[in-house]
Image (cartoon, rainbow, N blue to C red):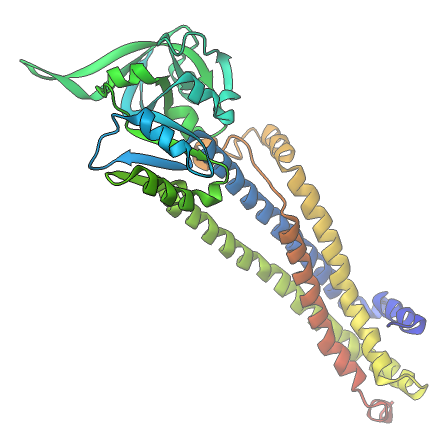
Length: 414
């Protein structure tokens, strides 16, 4: 498509002489703009993908994909209902849960917490929970000999396995002097760390039977958590569960529970993509301006080439190559930098954090304890294609202008 003569002339025009220095500076800034735009877009999209993936994996690892709650009926026959749910296609497990809010106190520190009563086998069926135990163990958990608390709660209350934490229920016991808060001390059996501050600082896992006693749910469960083989099919599986167990219960999938949160993430992701794309667009306009200035500067040379037999197509291809080369080089360098930066972003954060002595990624603000990044090959490819397309389109206008120059008019006053 491009002849050797055309490539030679295009390369010569890309190497500006001293009097063409200003054009070279504009071309350099165009190259730098495209490079930074592509790199930044890939990095930001990778971080947002990683953030969503990590949040989703932890939310679904700790909570069920589908929750069955009591509505007009109570969950007093939770084992029978769970057995019915397990027969539904796509359901991997169904576990009864007793859940309630408490105030946890220890060593003079008080903190709100969410207690989840679970059986030991159901706890171990959650890989994220089972693999997150950092200290202590589950020995005697089923017999009610301890509770499991999050690492941030343990750190805030200065608790270690073997020590006791006191739980205070907002629903107290009635007495002659009014309502007395219901409280009980439990031994800490283990400490877990799932890497999400909301769970690590406020979740307490208690044996199922002990939770029934503490929350006065004897013979009942507050919900049944269902794990499916595909979280994306949770809505359809929830519909099948509703048909099996009948009326009197509410069936809620994780997408409805967290819809506002993930919708906000998706909107933010789209807005960031559009804003960062403007960096590439600005760089592309610089390509157009530098190429137009190059065409004006090389008008005499273009006229001489035309008189020597160069066709309009040859001139068009020469200047198309000069403009497209800036876009191609900038896109390649930017994509390499962006991918390399995204793959090592956590190590770079640790390096900068150690050098500056500041917390650059506060887990209490961003939920996660580490900065995630997940590169989507299709998305990265789309960024590269978009940058190349814009660069090619920006190169066509100046190239057509160069091809349409009339050599007679250019040389008339020379």
